[in-house]
Amino acid sequence: MSPEFKGFLLFSILKMLVVFTAVLVGVALLTLMERKVSAWMQNRRGPNRVGWAGLLQPAADGVKNIIKEETFPASANLLIFTLAPAMAFVPALLLSAVIPWAAPFPVAVDARLPLIGQVSYHGPLSMAVVDLPVGFLFVLAISSLGVYGIALAGWASNNKYSLLGGLRSSAQMVSYEVAMGMSLIPVLLLAGNVTFARIIEVQQAGLWFVLPLLLSCFVFLVAGFAETNRLPFDLPEAESELVAGYHTEYSAMKFSMFPLAEYANMTTVSAMVVTLFFGGWDLPGPWAPAPGLWLTVLTGGVMVVKVLFFLFLFMWVRWTLPRFRYDQLMALGWKVLLPIALLYIMVMAFTIWVVEKWLGPGSPRLAMLVLFGLNLVLGYFVFFILDRGWIVSGSYRRPTPPTSSTLPAPSAPGAP
Amino acid sequence: MAIGVKVMKRPERQVSYVRAALKGMALTFKHMLQPKVTMQYPEEKSTADARGTWAISPRWRGTHRMMADEQGRTKCVACGLCPQICPANCIKLVPGEDAEGNRYPLIYEIDEFRCVFCGYCQEVCPEEAIHVGVHYENAEYSRSRFVYDLERLGSQVHPVSTLWDPSDPRGE
Image (cartoon, rainbow over all chains, first blue to last red):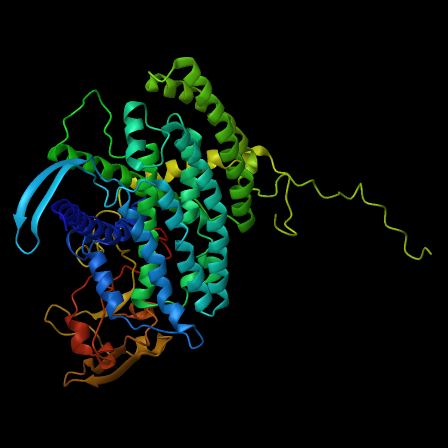
């Protein structure tokens, strides 16, 4: 092996260790954050008995879950029943590999290390575990694998509620994936590329995409809530209807894999929103620092703060909004979000073309400001329409049933 | 579209979702900043003389106390009114008499498991001997410990209940 390849391998393994450890610990801590946020929103204190301010609560939960008894339903399909939690968890974890967590770190290493020999690495080191050229396409592809874990968990449990939960989850995730994918096409149009690094560069040169692509951001966020089965869309769990949905029959650590997968998915969706629409690790301001260690650490911190804000938003929404009815969920996905996303692609494609013809490629910030102005107008109309009951009444537009005055008069009794 | 769902033609302010959702989010965020109402129980306890919002009511009827007079003798004269009025039949009283003819209880036991904490015993007692107490931490390791004998009843120190007075219903 060449020293360059060894260096690449060494840094990749290091990044893997750091990112996966951080994500796993972060996901465990998110369970605590969820309970704390829910407590605060209900004027309670939340868990504060284990460790300082309850910080060791996830560890206590983990120990409890590991030593708890595992139960297997008598007629479950044992192989799939056992595999399903891992199938839900692995794709969720896999996605954290492609998110760039901080600014690239310039490395120049030429060293002889014990055991592995000569190692060299030169150039900027991407702070994503893998800097994939296919970018968010990979995220869309892998995140749709998560539905297998949930659907199979529901099926393998051999329980009607679990099965219903699994079916709902697959229907929901398939439906919202369409809107999610469509909402990302304007990003592609504006950035001209699907790699995260390039998207962040374009946002640094212009504006954060949340301004010129406001509606895309909105559609993506809503679809993200649905993809992660979070509360306004947590039909798969729906404890008031389905006991606990797809994880009714699970116990101990196998059960706790599902919430962990949910939190890992939330982290990914938050990181995606941040990267695609909120500038990733970018910190806006009139300064252009030289890349270096402190810049990488600083931008990493900025990224974590942004992701935490969106995780908080997930929890905030969860403890505020009630669950949708199933027809409302489907109507919102297919009849509201998808048309919005499709129309938005057409409008944005046309506008970007016009703006580029008009302003030329030299002034990306001005062009994006023009787009932002258009978005304010479009956003006003979309929210104006959505507020007319299109979201809550999935079947609002149905013609009203005939009233008594339009019905034929009942024939008199005794008439022939 | 769900089958058979009756859709009402409602006024717009009732079907608005975006505004209502935003209003709800604002409300939950406001609640996050409000003071917490949880009482940290084992560290922080509520007593009859506690200040603040978590004072236990002085009319609380908990486990009993037997009062003693100035010489340290029990006030009870074993008149038998409390076992008579007790609706749960939880008081066991065996009267005794000393050389001067003073009656006193030989055995006085209250089964706190049977007791319904109505406070009639305190109300009926002519000597103000038996009282229900303002007290709620009663855990024991065995059931037999819940039969309080005379010694146990006399050694309790918690405050006693101020029973409801019909002539002063609001406690003023």
